[in-house]
Image (tube, rainbow, N blue to C red; front, side, top):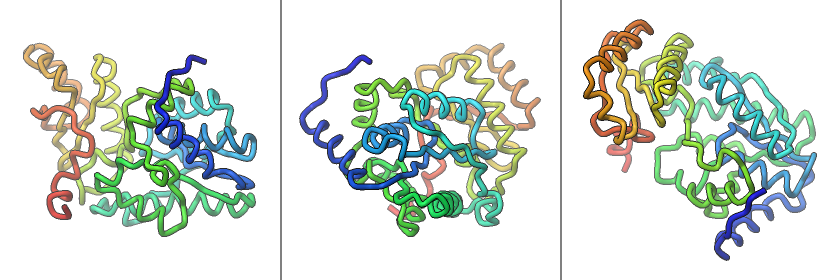
Length: 280
């Protein structure tokens, strides 16, 4: 394993992170295969070994690639991985897709984890919110807090950049992997979430990935309009008329009637712009 020098401050935060698991008999980690939950799982496994379990909830809101990534990273860590079917589609308020959608989704999912923990006498359940998440609209954090799910990365003040530094130091291959929130975040609020819409978005993003775009988001407005977000440095590819026609043909085949390019480029959490203006 290749290691990289860490500042004393960051080493202290890592010590505090592992201390979160000291004296704990067993732990379940809400695991997505992203860098945040991966570092959290790594720290739990450092302290608890086989008494730590990573739990991946699979549903239509995630992709096959994300599931395979979760398996790969869990194998790198050496932690036991449990794959469970997520039940968020049983919650009407999640399907309705109001601005509190994430709250209802996380409430269902975290409740599943707690039910599993109780049945298996697991003492602690944790999730991967970090210190930077306080700067975005994160109703899911409220659900975690209400249910007693702890967020150790946030507790010790680890930022996304610091998490990536630690993940790189410990040899996790996803240390620089772009964040990939669930597919439901691509659908504008108050437009109901359906399997068909999620599959359409996933197929469109997979198409762009095959064309070499990273990161990419397909934001769905109404049932017909796809708003493409890509890195600003890749926007110039759309100056080519043949390429634009190629993209338009593919996305209309997938069921989008109107295809647009966001001139600001990729912006994480862009669907929350109006919410943050109201609540900020």
